[in-house]
Image (cartoon, rainbow, N blue to C red; front, side, top):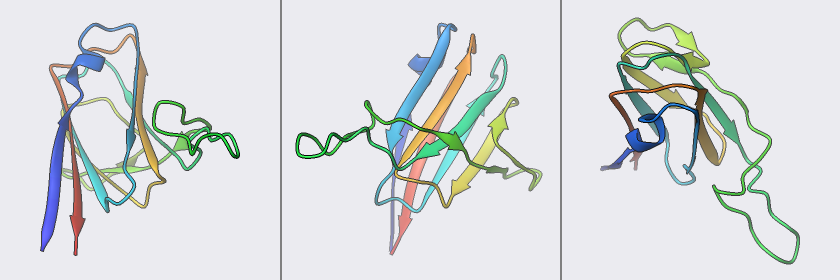
Length: 119
C-alpha cells in the first residue's frame, strides 16, 4: 500500500525575489517536484539539522539549517542534477529530514511537491 500527499508551494515562487521553502519530509520515501515554467534554476537541498537547541526544542522545518545539495532525477531524461531550471518532474530520494527548494529572483507558474511512502 502506498500513501502520498501533494503540496502546492507555488506562492513561494510567484513573486520572485529571494525564494526558499523548507519542507519536513521525515517519514516520506520520495519527493517528486514538478516545475512549471520556472524563470531560472531552483536548487534542491537537504539537511538533518532542524536547528534544535538541546533541552529547549527539537527544531523544525522553519529553523532548519546547514543545507547541502541533493540530486533530483529528471523523470523525462533520467539525468541527475542538483537544480531544476526547466519544466518537468524531478524525483528526489535518499534525502535528509528537511527538503529545501530555493532560488534567487525565481518565478514559476507552478511548483508542486508530491511526497510518497510505499509500505
